[in-house]
Image (cartoon, rainbow, N blue to C red; front, side, top):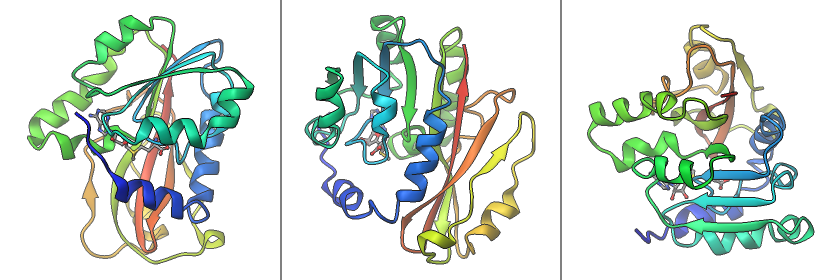
Length: 231
Ligand SMILES: C[S@@+](CC[C@H](N)C(=O)[O-])C[C@H]1O[C@@H](n2cnc3c(N)ncnc32)[C@H](O)[C@@H]1O
C-alpha cells in the first residue's frame, strides 16, 4: 500500500513530553498482557511512538503489520536498544491488517495479538459505516481461542488544553458497565463536535477494560479504550 504519513511521525516525535502520561498508562496496561508468549503480532505498530520497551523485551520475534512506509525504519530506530539487547527478530509486513488477519494468525499460531491504536482508524480506511461496524464487531469471533488485546480510539474531539499534571486519570470500565459518557467529556472540558470511532463492540462485553485520555494535540483529545481478551 506504501502510504507515507510524515505529519503523524513529526507529531509523534514532537509530542513525546505531552504524551508521557498516555504512554505511561499504555505501558501499565501492556504490563497486564497475557504471559508466556515468545511471539507478538503487532498490528498498527507505526514507529512505536507510544510503545513501551519493557513490553517489547518479552518477545523473541515480533511481526509488525502496518501499511505506512516509514513505520518499519522508524520503529527499528526508536526501539533499537531493546531490539539489540534482547536480540529480537523484528519483521515488518506492509499489509492491510483486517482483510489479511487470518493469514497472519495462521502464520504465527502461538503469537500474542495486539492491535496497537489501529482499530479506531478503521472508519478512515473503510468509509462504508455499516461495513466498518460489522467488521469491527466481528473481530472477537475471528480471534476466538487466541489471546489478544487492543488499545483503540473510542471518541475524540476538542476540549481544554491541559498541562500534563492536569490531565484526567484513566478510568476502569468493568465488564457490562455502561460507558461513562458524560464523565469522559467533562474530564477534558469537551466542546464542539466529537467523533465516535465505532469501536465499542470491538472488545467482548465480558472484557474488563480501561479508558485512557490522550491529548493528541493541545486542546484536542482522544479517549482510548484498552483491554485484553485471554483466549
Ligand atoms: C495511531 S497509529 C499507531 C500508533 C502506534 N501504535 C505508535 O505507538 O506509534 C495507527 C497506525 O496504524 C496503521 N493502520 C491504520 N489502519 C490500518 C490497517 N487497516 N491496516 C494496516 N495498518 C493500518 C497506520 O498506518 C498507523 O501507522
